[in-house]
Length: 484
Image (cartoon, rainbow, N blue to C red):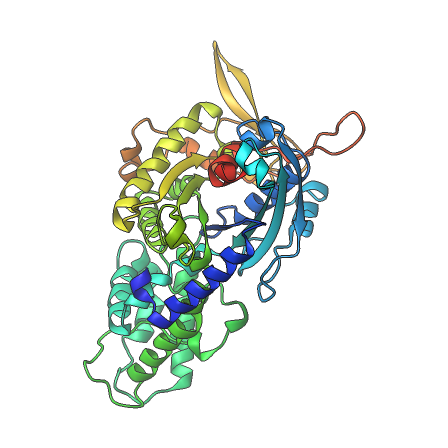
């Protein structure tokens, strides 16, 4: 990704890194990026991570907690005044008091969590290094998918977008867009109304691709789906076009689209990379492979392609004292499949094998040399528990939870208060089969949405921390070495 930004941008990134390293000599900090595609569970992951650290959650696989060296964890004002604060408190209320899932990530946000601990290493105790500031940066994966656009011209973007829109199930979804685009002469005079109509038609096509039944993932430009405060701006009022000419006339539709595409890169994509992505030390990418598998082979291949695009956006590299003074690289990347609580624990190993299969080619494509990449199946908030039911002479493993109001299973609709037991089916032993086989009849049961759990209370009446599956293992990988 370094080749996609100018020398001036590189100089600004280096100066920011030098300043950050100087400030962190006596109070070290670690910047962790949390991303993933829509509805992968980024908001829930951050909320549960912070809640468990602050409230002494059960984290046996996180060495700092297991060894009882964690003194306390607490929130502090974040260092970046120009970035919205992650709304931790309201998300906790949603999960704990209202038992509803918080709204998903729509823009970038940040939160500073400070951890005080007893070092295990005598040298660190001598230096009084017993505090770590963890800056958690939450941003949509759709924005990350825009970064490869920095290396592309409008003509290249259009050719790739039109080819993708005409393939597979996308072809039917893009009919209205093509009907409008095919009738536009690229050399005709620029018309703002036509440009708005074309951009809107392309946006509707992208939104249709993201429908649960299709679960398609490769959808740049990402700000079309999550525009934030740029909604309606000229920088977001463009779209790919067919039949482009080599030298478009000045003031033509094609010339206007090319200019706005370049503005999008300059005003939206490049600042996002320079101000946020280039400043990260560690990264977790959350994915929902079960949703893709339920949608079929096309969605699985699309998820693999999107994951490769996402991983190729990071600056990988190992820790080096000298270069680390002026250059930040990401030395650890965790790719985690969410909603492990929708599976019986006997299937968790199969899910992790599937994630490793998805990541394998993505790593090859991204060329992540120097970074340690791991995969994991987790549930940041566990909404179900496991049980078994007798069927004839056999006992079937099931998961038990409270489906959200309006969820249906086999024609039965739930009221949001009634528990039910569900047999989630089995994942395939061979991970390659997810690229070939249609979903099994039981797969739909994995996509019932459950309410967050009702939290247990301790003997003194205090509410316990949010239950999870392998959140502690994720913590150990992301920050364990920095609090040793």
